[in-house]
View 1 (cartoon, helix red, strand yellow):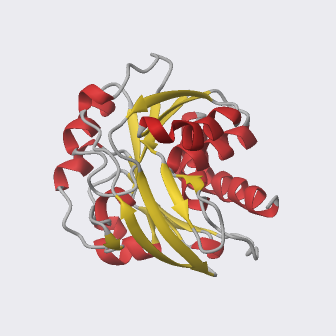
View 2 (cartoon, rainbow, N blue to C red):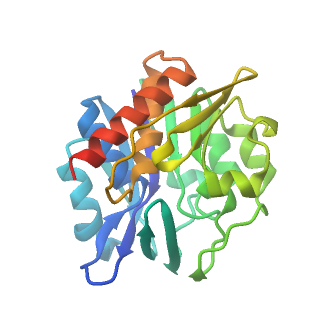
View 3 (cartoon, rainbow, N blue to C red):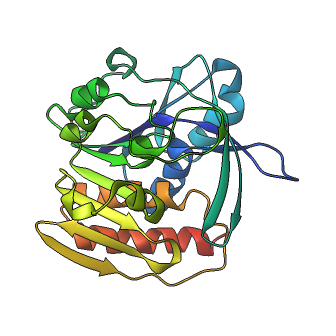
Length: 255
């Protein structure tokens, strides 16, 4: 069994009403497709619970709400795989005491930060006790300030001490440098419609994908959850990435 933790977001696009976003929402979509038991723990301001958390609940995975003080919000658009994004509001910081107790059956935890401030090292350390943690590289490189989204490598290296598997986008990998040099057991770099590359056990393997002309919003979150679910089921890293690519493709094809 896996668990997923993260802030929900209010996603804003021109000409559309606000939409729910963030790892808990897009991860729940992938979990519905997988049909696997899991636990989602999601956070936003109480006044946004109905708009952002209720859609997660409706997707069917057991979900728990953690009330916050603020709700993350983003303004963005896509041009193919290229994303233009602005931070409209910064979400809550998760401290160790903000994380509810997890069932003993949870062996993998996917931590889905939206910005660098979401999950400090102390919280990752608490989650990593007796469990393996997967971490989205957004939580390393995305500066936590309002305005145009900025990426840099000014992260706390202590965070990676508690991460078993790290997912990076191409842009994030460019900021951090050679993925094979990062002090993490498994690194997966996603290339959008071109698939993913897995760095594990001293080996590098590319996993191809079939390009689809669809809005890729949430594809990274769906990939992370699907990868973690496959690893929890005993798949080796490259096979887990293949399964995750297939799940993302099926979700995009259904749009």
